[in-house]
Image (cartoon, rainbow, N blue to C red; front, top):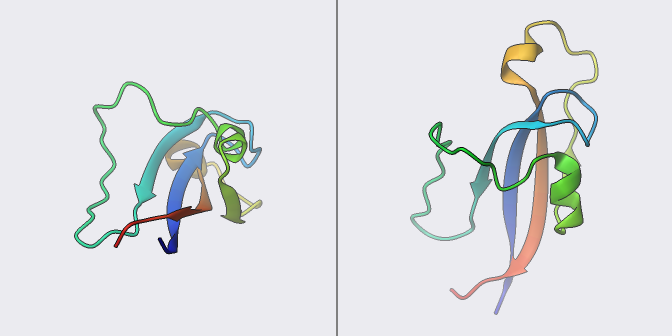
Length: 88
């Protein structure tokens, strides 16, 4: 089975990896896979970037450290990756 890259876009309350997650989207390396942010979710798969790191995700993009007050609404976006085996 080939190893493929999964992507996790996670918005957090601050640039600190242990700050609370606000939203997330996981992009799967499968044909026809659709990624959507579900506003009805009562619980995210990870409470923080740190929780995702513990589960084996790696940070590949850190949010801009010079954030403005506007960022308080949408959060600070981290991008993480995880390489896993997938059947084609």
